[in-house]
Image (cartoon, rainbow, N blue to C red; front, side, top):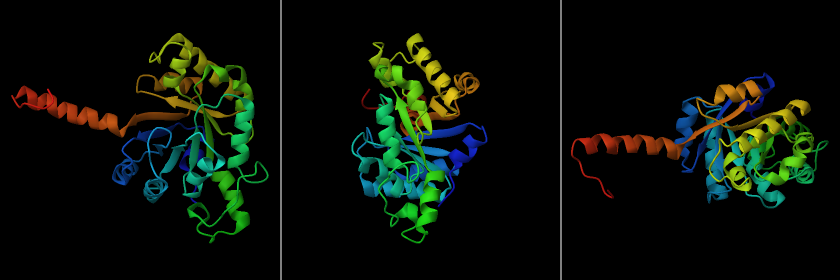
Length: 261
């Protein structure tokens, strides 16, 4: 099984750079890998990616020795394990609200002795039965990561317990949905969000777990000092917006007319 770049860097105390794609195009994943990013974030919560396309995206990342983080749909255990069987390095489960839910996620995504993940080594992650079963179980537990999102006020009383669940590697703060739950929609820099981030940082420090969140060039140093090591930055649609928006602006200044205006 391919060794995880994300886990290697995190275990060495180094920050990880991850970027998100919305276009679900393997060409974009290939370019991101060529630029040397540690991880690409593929979203199956908000984007209608079918399993076949997801497999192509994951394989493209693997060809570049780049990790894939798949944010799964919050459904059955099959929604959790299929990305891993396709070769994804990690999954992120949205809206984890309590310790019990975190325990069930860990149980469904970790093999013995940590959990009871359903076993089938005949897929990409098990090299289609070419990897010995004992090696497959061990390597899967060692080289895949499971992340849960803290993005609801309901999770506040359980953050330390969630961070303490064996089999959950990282906590990831989701500021956008969290801002809605806290009654300040869209205000991701609101003091209430900052307070939640601090609580997550403290809980992960106590439980020796990694954590992360979306960052910018301006906020990354502050969060690095707070202990955040998994950084999500940028997205393909934002890059395209900046590039094509810039072209439109510059050519518009030359008198070229664009539609819609």
